[in-house]
Length: 472
Image (cartoon, rainbow, N blue to C red; front, side, top):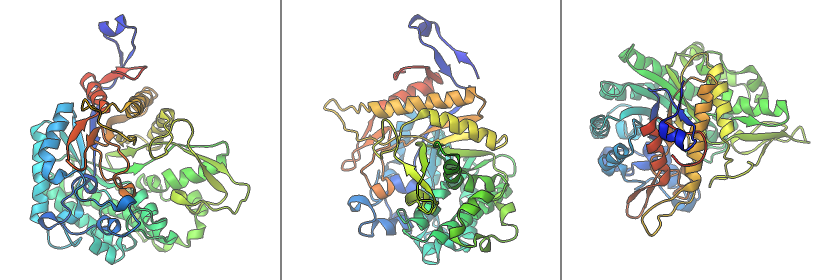
């Protein structure tokens, strides 16, 4: 880690923060959020197709079609990435495109699309980072219980091996699952995400089977490429703040440690299991050998971060939280402080530094990659054809500086991928929230580079940025 200044920077009194020379810069997306073409070339239905088609589930009745029409416009989107100087692109593969029914017959046209995408990225010297699952479970598997059904974990490992065998000669970095916490607790617990199940016990069953799927898939991919490929899982984290240590412990356990610790080989945290006794006997779901499978070693851990979580104890010890942390007793989630994003999330880069330093210490030497970090704001294209997204640019620069501080404090962070490359379908919020560093007109599919993308492009070009201020 070095601190560098140039003569020009010295003249204007700026301190420049530089990153390690091999630090990975890029952006991320997810298949269902951008691809569209949900029935093209044999693609099967996913749980998100079904959920979005259910009245009242997604804001304004929005669906994943056409989204950003990336399935047809991938080449121009890759050209756009190249123009921004992105060194890496994290994308997800749609399981229903590869196996429309979740198992058995493989759809060649689906694999061919990702062949074309990967080849296009490599032609532009952009490293592909493939995520095998970003929430779009084939609907047929959900009809048989989805992630509540242990068999789904084995079907996922089969699918992972199929994709890896096809693309593994060109894709070196792989993620099994994106944010299994969201899939389990928002999909099966409070039902605000697909498949919309509201069953507390089912949420933990799903969480365990998702982790089992990760372990089985990691073993399958490692068998195909024992040494050369870098394998990972991506988890969503939040720094938990509050004046009451017990309230912080409870929420941190259910938010951060419950899925991370099993991946690290430490099993499910006992204090979290004690906090969730209201869910029944979860140990009936865990079978011999499961925890060893889940702990199959990974090469890096993806970190998705957006905002801190503030908590406080309640006067009533029997009060039970609702929302994403449903079920915890005696704890209340507090509103964010200061400036908020369009989603109402607190903007606090200090929490990001704290999280990365703590995680790096907790994972015992496994490198971290920031696989998602971003903010939603209502953007407009001005009469001159520009999108001056001042708030997002400030958020991005503050959080990149937070990564630099974490590295300076000893955190082993190897890369930063902004969420998201494009404005897209934002799950239950439909098209109402814009996270992209590139604006998308969903009527015309016109792409417009935002000022935040220009800022990221300059950071990538310099591999650094000024220590203070909001321009680079």
